[in-house]
Image 1 (cartoon, rainbow, N blue to C red):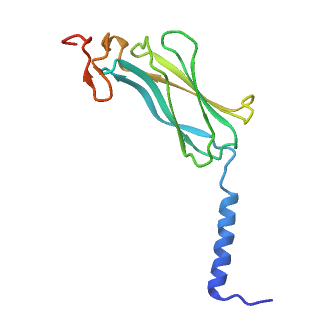
Image 2: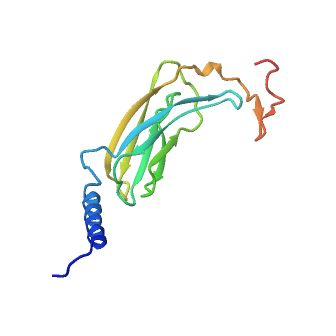
Image 3: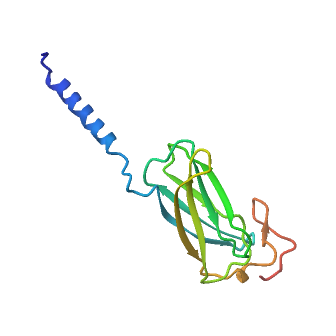
Length: 161
């Protein structure tokens, strides 16, 4: 049996420890995602409101899968659905609804986050959360106060909003 020098022995021990750590990496009892932040945004300058959230990856996601977020429509229509493909290097996924109408203060609105398999036909995991606006839509101006990338004054906007 060959004798190992101290530096080689240290390398072998380090490699063995890394192997053990890699084997312990994913805990099947952990959820795939956790919600980290989110809520409503009212941009009165452009007369736009939306809501969104960030989903932090808590364990390895299946390759080729899809992450899907659906947002309750405050105006009563069907839920808005936004999807993103699973990327192994991603540590979080940010989702945002399209522009909204009908937001009511203090009313909870539901979002659903789903992890789908590579065919998109099987739901692997599903998480629900609600977000509540602290403002009503009526604070928004009828017309955007500004237009364009430089926030130029909108000539159609009221003089004193």
